[in-house]
Length: 401
Image (tube, rainbow, N blue to C red; front, side, top):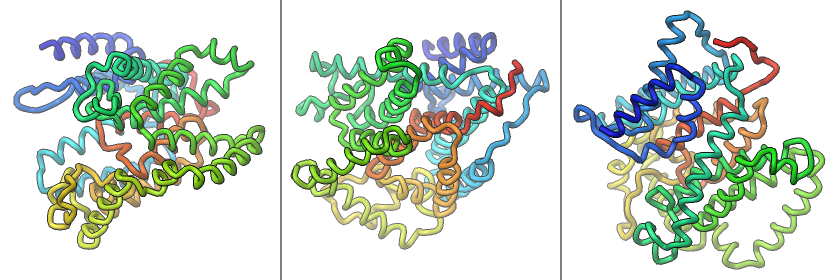
């Protein structure tokens, strides 16, 4: 009842002040952790809020006949992606589970993308407002993680032994997966703001706090893949900027020399440690699976059961996903889904807004060894970043709707 009451209150806000409702939703992405069943149908607070926003926003715009679909360079890849998800839903071994994945990871996030795209185009909301909303979410997640580390309380087994914080999530890597793109977004926004560094930090206090606290939380979670992804993306960002290019090249050379001279780091990066061995085993078994199911994959939410006949490393559990961005999409959406994602990524390389595009790059690099998309908050976060990356202020219509 509490979650329903919260949703009702959110609905009133979304109806009276659509922009405020949208920003509240963006700032509360981790609310998917609050779950409920309505008439036997499982859902989350995040999903109820999102559906409420879609409903109120849709009614307002259909009633006023003001909505115009925001044409975008990625319209065709999106259509292909939805087609791939639909086919994977049909071939999935568990239709109920697949339907939940389809709506939560594709349909709902894409609709939200269209809403944000429309609001940005009509100048009803600014990228900076969205940056701040995401940063507020990151600050809360980070503060919980830091408090966990200081007190030692609330860290689930077995992560408590190493004191690896999990914040509000169930496992440490979820901290890095969520915070990584937001830290990149906020950090680059502050660095690219006008004025000296101190002025930038003061004038962008929320974004600065998200960057600093987020990095601390990622370190305390010992999310090594996130750290590597952040460093790699910052180096790439430095190469793109002419004024910092020579420094990025010099730093890159130093890291290339130092890495082989640091055995623990070298082992991590070359997947020679235990975690790397687990990943290599996963990928090998997944490759065997895809030799037989290369066209359609395993269907939405079908990977664990499909992998069983190929699972030879019985001392390891079967994970929900293969922990590699290419394999994740291939097993879930088939070859058509891989083509759609590759097409989408190609289009995004020419994004007019480079900072959110680099945040997406951070997620991609992290995704080489993890699952940066197939999770309620992450799927929505990705589509928020895509909407921001496509934002072109020269094509903004300064007319309120």
